[in-house]
Image (tube, rainbow, N blue to C red; front, side, top):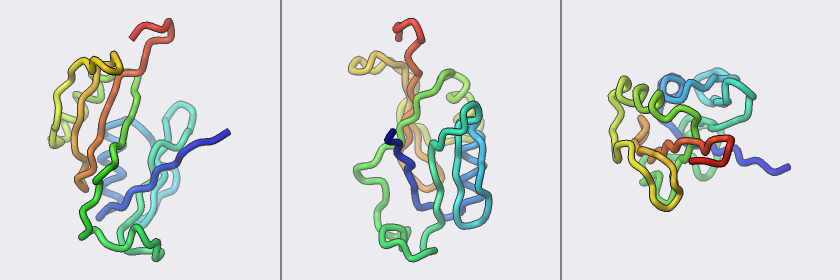
Length: 132
């Protein structure tokens, strides 16, 4: 088994935790001011970790002053795209792209920025019967 557990640097872990919980309906399992683990509410799979800038001396998480996010897309597949879209609008999120059909993937998706400026892509999970 191989799984990725993405960790991003954030200015304020509690604020980012609440933002992602409100957007995705996920849950927090670690707690604290400097690190958080966000998991799927149904199966507890880790979906994203939040790490406060400048703590624990990780070389790539030293400073928020370096342009972050270049070459990175936080891509989430979800069961209910329109619920997440409503959540994003309720958060007054910075929207990069409104919901649309991506002709390459055949999925409905939209894009926004999180509190720290990371590019977040939300895509509708393919239906169980193989239809998009």
